[in-house]
Length: 131
Length: 227
Image (cartoon, rainbow over all chains, first blue to last red; front, side):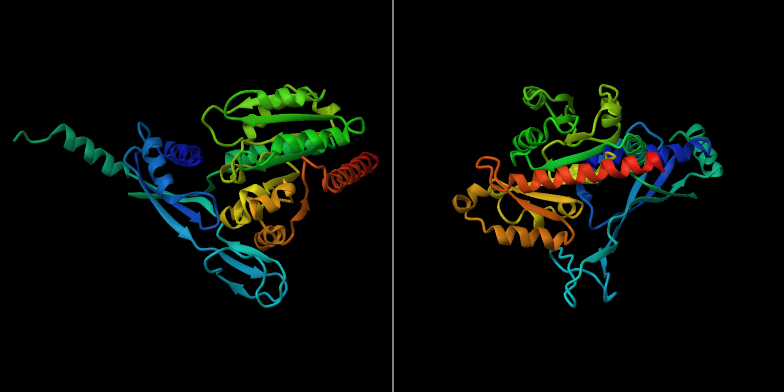
């Protein structure tokens, strides 16, 4: 379950970015996750729910874009997407394949509340009509 | 809402520490091996045999990673080799910071070879660079021929794969050629040795290769000092 330390790093990185922006709450964290990593998406989502508690990302949504594995032959340069089961030898010429994509584990961007949204929310909570 | 670009690797903090470790190791001309496998593949036994073969020729030390106990570090110490145990508690892998902290215990400048025996696990340690220059994965025959297919990332990132417990091939019904072909499928460039720590068959080819790698390293280290 290294997804716990991965989720912790995701929250840490996102929080430090949000702190540069007056510590406004994070709404979305966009992650690119390659197919050829050891990270299990469901486990990561579960770990994220634990890691986000009590942080600027407490109510953030983790958006995961799965990046498919793409390989390229170093000799014939054919670019393919390996089907079920990874085989990193070119079916055409038998030479090793290099991985073009699929190893990503990267935060693309975060979305944070604007100052207007934040003050609006604050006003709403303060002047809530009594029903 | 406002979008803020991040473009940062999730493991960048670990990679930074690993790069610092690597710079330190290279400056000292030290070969650092990250030894990984599933639990029970025979990492520690193989390490004992390897250290015995190289004893007297190189100055060696071992960092042991386990979730609990210092039993492995004791085994290495019994050979007269300096060892330090990292107990990770609940963490399933070593990371670069744990290694950096352990380095304070060793006189790094007095060593030729540092082996880091990772936590027994074919998944998590694959993602965490420690700053090593050699990644060695042990796969025991008794685990079956399909481990490289099931854990491709670990095998793909290995420099050397050691097929251990070859004496159990017949008893386990495992075809060694099939296992080796499965390793090659996910890592065509891997250097593969098949051996048995129990009978000693094949062990010498591995330890000689390692010795050669260490000598080459010594030559490059000396050349860089001279240059």
